Image 1: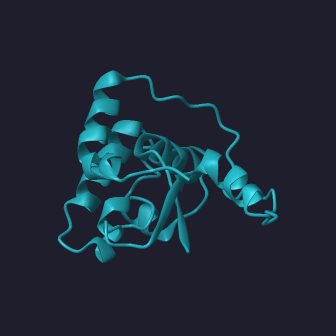
Image 2: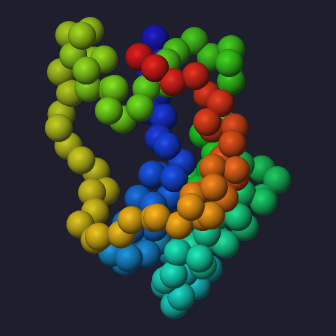
Length: 133
């Protein structure tokens, strides 16, 4: 059985913004795109739109790609939210390490409803993926 973790696109982009831009975890491509000079969320969102505009998802930055570009309804498997993964594996008798990769400590919340709506529209197909373990 295949199990993949589905992340809410808004949460995923905010996490990437905090990790790479605000905490300045160096990413060569983001540096080359000048995201470290103007570190506003508006600039980051324009980078997201640029990446999603590329014809081939494999040419897009891996932190920006749509999950729906790699999901097909014919896949045998499950998409779980990050909160569902541990309980799912626990029910199956599989122990998981409690490692949190790429954790951030900087405080940033996206509250602008227009930007949230824009992200939800850009990732509209991701929200159509059936999620649940």
